[in-house]
Structure formats: C-alpha cells, structure tokens
Length: 99
Image (cartoon, rainbow, N blue to C red; front, side, top):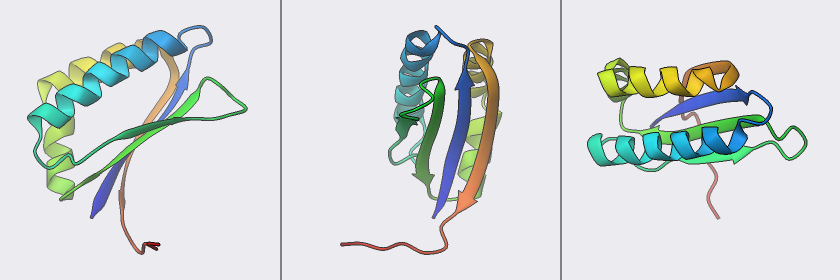
C-alpha cells in the first residue's frame, strides 16, 4: 500500500479558508478516484498553521494520475495561495501494527 502525504504550512489567519478548500478538494478526490480509500487532515497542536494530510492508495501510478489531473493542479494552486509551504510526498508502507 502507498500513501499520499501533504505537508502544509498555512499563512497565519488563513487556516479556516484553507481547511474549507481542502475539504472540498478531498471530497472531489474520493468521488472521482476509486483508488483513494480515505483521507485525513491533522493539525499541529502547538503550531496551529501546520497541517499534514494523508491517505492510502492502491498504487503509486494512481497517485501520479491524480496529481497530473487538471482538477488536482487547479485545486492545489488555490491551496498554495493560502500557504507559505506545500510539500507533497508519496510513501510506501513498510510495516503496520494492529490491535
């Protein structure tokens, strides 16, 4: 399994606008890309403008197709306007522990 991660540092005061746009983008992703299973956005408890988004995908090729889609490019450009830093990363599962 592979995971798409996004590291986001949002401009101060733009956090709520960023979250709204990201939620719309995430919903579009889940509705249009079958290999996207779920997605989370987490926020740093001490630095309220730092976020990490992540979710599992079936293959690196699925993530690449998503990132090359016109809607992805447009949506991320809109999100980047609200950010000081954006870093997309693809990671592969190497182990997991379940209860």
